[in-house]
View 1 (cartoon, rainbow, N blue to C red):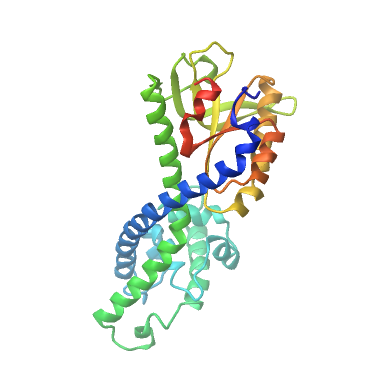
View 2: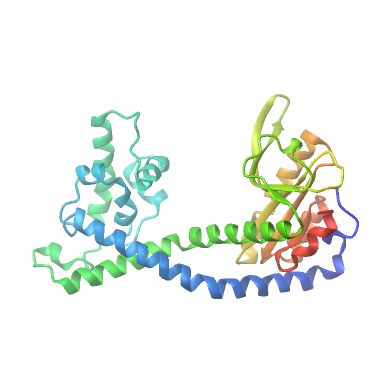
Length: 316
């Protein structure tokens, strides 16, 4: 349900607000991204150097090596020409992406027999060995390795690895920034943060929490948990707290491709709790009038991060 005076009704301001949001995001990105990338590259370089040591400069790529240090697979995907995404390596090795994800998280599947596991690790290594970027590793042709060659190769692989991780790094930091901004705003107004919420409907007035599971019905019988980024219980009497979805984006194309996601969520929430459930977006970045119009047509309101006082319009 829309609140009178909230952004959903301020159509004449949408275009200006959109560009102010873009400027806010760009300023943050230019300040944050270089520092984050440099930090990630240092961490990646340590990981690459460790992998060079474990594989004896990539001369010993064996199933046993991965068995003892499965997390090195993320580095091994970067030593091929071209570097391999998880999906591509899964296809080339005829294994599931979830299996590769487990390895890169330093976890070995417990339900697989040892012989089957070793067979899977052999299959993982086959495309990596075949596609090794030999220009990076001239010593593999029989020449002796020099410290300069090792260092050069390590930096190139670390850059590849950091590039592959840059989008997840940015997404993670975007979420941290948005949650922190909401927390600072609410605590300044006297709200109390609740670390764990079992039932969002029973939250006390002037409290808020992050990453709360809200049960929604799918069909007549099935119920699933919908993760909500922020749940705010204002002091005003209402049956349900305000549910907030944080969204931060660095380009217009991706937001318009995914704009139906919120429509699906609000429809599931209304089907479960009725039209009085309050669901809004917390936006930062590239959200144009096309996106805003689509959300407004679904009755979804929003708050701009660059003007966080918009929460006041929702009764916070």
